[in-house]
Image (cartoon, rainbow, N blue to C red; front, top):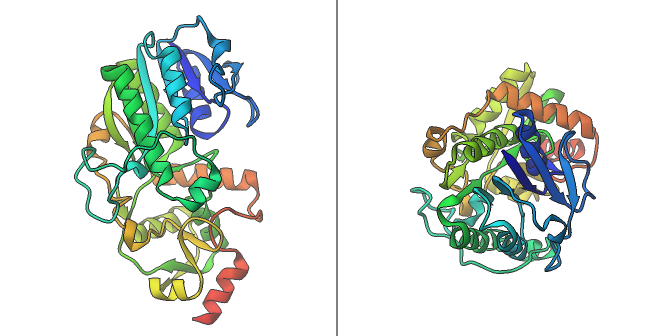
Length: 330
């Protein structure tokens, strides 16, 4: 098959391209080429999706499958559909569980209410001031995909994506912290958490293109209680740790943020989003998504952490000094 990966130089797009190449497919990656190299064997076509004719360097080319990982731009999605939607045999759009409108109530499936669509080009500044913008732009993009390519489309609403190439430190914070040992601050909650290793997501997306799988799925692994996950991580790492459970009220009092960002405890969702990572993975698992073992997922995340540097300044988590201050305050 001939794949077009709209992206291909970082994280999800690059992993999808590498997986398609591994299976012997021809892969073209369309990107600026500024975030890094495409996988060996792929052809990079430099494009600028910010301009109306930015995909012109691909004019006249045809593809059996298109995978679009556009993060926060409706316009990028619209232009790609206009250029290739009619002739592509299969179209994958990587959306997000952030598209759902009510993460504070138990989910029932992919038919749950979505955020209002916003046909915008998002920016990091917009996401900082308007947290729902990301999900709303994904909804508008999904709508464009289904309206243009209809029954050729796979909408993959991805949850927390982890593994090699992860840029946000949410999952990777934990294995690197556990390997240090000692007393570990954790949120005293009973909430469920889910993740999907980027390599498993990529394998499933390539499978879908090969088999013609279409429809809308929550692209995520099974849910489990956060504290159970952390305990299992410690076990597979052989980490000598003592979990210090701290109430949400105390964490807030001490200035610790949930989920991500500086001075945070990753994977701890606030009450308003307690069911965001409690989606039903069964339909996606039945369609062929095969999550790797936790040991493999943790090993991949930890290898990536070591590549980046265990002592670097992180985008998410607590520094050793911050954690020590919290423990002293308790």
